Length: 193
Image (cartoon, rainbow, N blue to C red):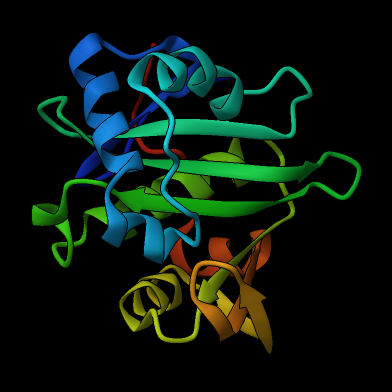
């Protein structure tokens, strides 16, 4: 059931379908962007473009089934970000959300929130998840506002350490299928093959 899923502002395409050369170069640029990497909680890699290209597919959609990733596209088909569900636990029907918009001109215009609503609806309505959780920095108020609009609620806050930024406060948020359905319904938006 991996197919293009349409939201109001965005279209999500399974990463397992691959990327054009231009899209792959855009993703590589994002992987080296200090601001993006800071907010996503990872350290920019020193890898080459050829290494990135060789390994990104297995990272996006590993054979163990514990991660699924989708490209976030504008309605005209331009790649602007990625959204994933990882640490998937099929028995408990849950997983962790990860999302970023790599093209910063789209920040603050509702594209990220739309992509999250569209993806979470797909996870609940089509892939039978019961809950989705995420972690974010307490200082990432822009992301938290988006997650709250989607219907995520704060589960806990805790002090963490990362080599990238040292000690920081982390927020864990969660949304259940029922909470999402009350806010957004579970009818899938238009789906195309």
